[in-house]
Image 1 (cartoon, rainbow, N blue to C red):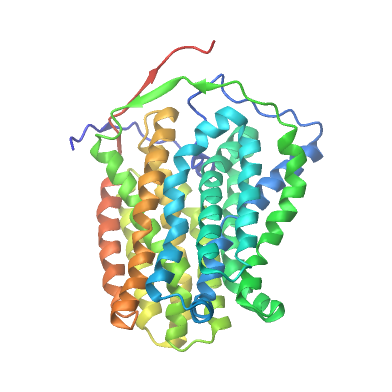
Image 2: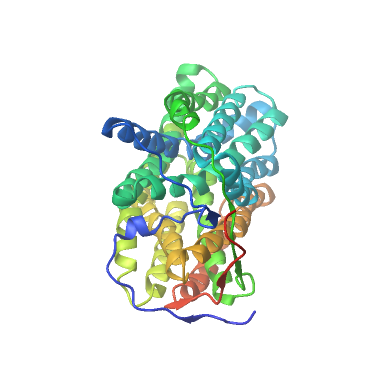
Length: 433
């Protein structure tokens, strides 16, 4: 692949959190217009709805992890089958994300978000039926909904709250982490109340149902768009730097979803009580907030992001090894460190998409490439962890996989962190009629 990158101009100080947001509808003509809110209260309610939607995008991953032993025991699902189940929603993030911009152009981002939230709620509720085929189908349905929401929610935040994008991004980020932490920490207590693993998994449909009632009137009252794609980006898929950004996104995500999918079972195998294991995962996820919020502002002020990316990979990987092998009394310490490293990696992967792009159209397409290819690649991580457990009877050899992913992520992160622009350009394909 030729290295078509060109030097990037120096980066001025900016509201780095808001800069993370990539507009998935950037190519639309006419550009989508922000809604006209009747009052400040209406705007605040809309913003709160977006934050609540974000909260619902992560319990699907973390709630299953803490109950994986109960699910496999009750259903007879093999370890290989459990691996496929944990990897399936991550695959969905890559496969269905590219459809989001076109759906938004046709029907409006708000309506598509509402439809995705409805599918997510239905898929989550269907996990209450103790059937293996239905468990896979419901996970596929919910994973597809999350994929579309992942793409459109930041776009809506950027469009409707341009003057407070950084604040809204902070709330959005904290809601994502809170949802993941709640899924890890509260699912087992819910199981003790519900009396079954299926009831505990299905209970996470309740927050989604509540947001539907709040968000539906706002989404359905939004104006229908009359837009089409009026730009295209050429040269992106042949660019070496674009692939480094994409692979960095995928490899760091593979580490993240290994934590979501398998950290609780790893800790339970080490002798931790199920509720304690879930609490440790919750602690690690909440620690991600620290660097999710701090790293963008720090990273964009560096001459390049190579050291930031490599350092965060090293921290996240070393902490994972600590969680697997260090004395059990040190596990909470390693959990916090892993969260700090992983949260910073998530932010760093998003910020390099913007910093490596010469314009907003390229950023939107590079984001689509990084998510589409990256998340499919990321699914290999949790899939292989489960297969290694099945083949060896232990999670110990998964450490080799973690180190391999970490080394590869550091290599790609070093390349993606160079102060260059991808060698792609935006081409207009005509004016709006």
